[in-house]
Image 1 (tube, rainbow over the protein chains, first blue to last red):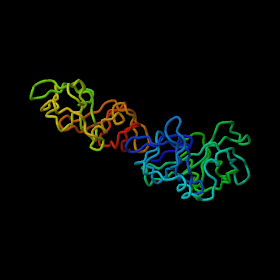
Image 2: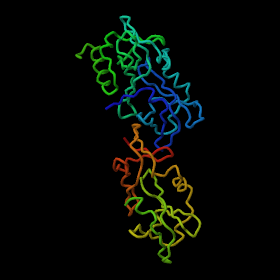
Image 3: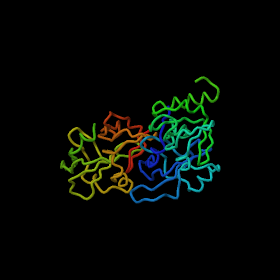
Image 4: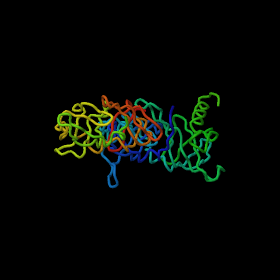
Length: 198
Length: 143
């Protein structure tokens, strides 16, 4: 089983060790594999006046991510921020750049603006992957969906420039409103792109 | 037996038949997981730690110890575990999958060997063998 989380829900989660100590909290998500996967996290200290830490948390060292905490074995899971960024460096725009991008289909229609990233965390932790499976977008007027935010599934790979996010026109058919039914929509959409049945 | 049931129980020395103090708390080693010492209040001597090894019996009406000197100042390892951050009661419980299960309301333990049996949460008991650690933020259990 896997769970879906919004990136805004992961930000500010406490990072807790097996010993039960909250030694940091998530500052931001660092994306790898051209924005398609979570590569790790940058960290803030805990507490009201704590600033950003010079260490970061690579995804391989994460035991579990849930709605309430990010769990690691111990403080030795941390690496310097530079080495994490170098490890996932791919010349692609970073996480913050995707937020606010305009979503364009390949037939030239604007669907809206990205306001959140949906991440799928496979259960079990450790070797588990965290895939970016979709975006929550503020719909453009032309889409005719009012002002309700909508969720749009993504294929495994995508192109993003920091200005635009290109999605296949077919993505439009798989838009859903709620996170509960979103997992199925992602699976359907990916199967569709591979030429399989809907 | 529950932690809450034994709080306030007398600690009696068998050599003088006098009350040494009363059970006021538990020191838990989450690695076992088990009770490694009791915290005894109202003692006349210095120190309030009663290591589990010094207990003759954890009876239904009293905890018996050979002499009053069984209760003393904890050694550094024990003092570390006895620190406030490692208290189980009232602590939030997180699984290794990052999901909060609730808070520890009480703990069920075996009074003959001190081994923890279950953590009692709002939603029900949780097998104590799943416990990985207890820190200032949370008790961590295997998912």
